[in-house]
Image 1 (cartoon, rainbow, N blue to C red):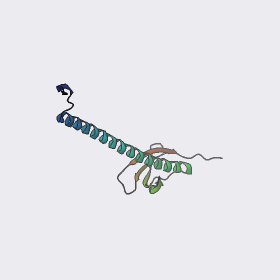
Image 2: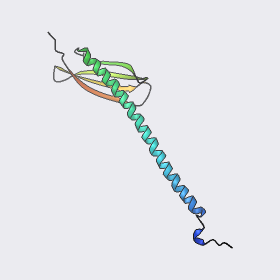
Image 3: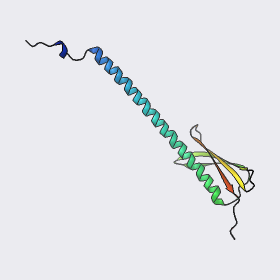
Image 4: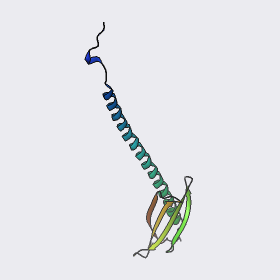
Length: 128
């Protein structure tokens, strides 16, 4: 008759349950980390799109080669199939030949990414 020694009986039910609990905790932590990473990537993408909208508006101001009036202007733009609201504020500076331009961009109808960008513009020189 074949005898099974006490050392070769395998795992007990408690050992298997402990191993399953440890595996479940590890998988839960990995899942949580993956979700946080995905959320961070989405937020970073939203901020980058908002930054591009802001840079586009500032480029339009610079390309116009006009001395911007001290004023606040609002508008909207489309970027990556989404609508973005922007507010462009032109302010005087202590240096009379400079204007401070601040643009704030946020996604329309959403509390997501918002970006604020500041630039300075000189009085355009006339080409003779």
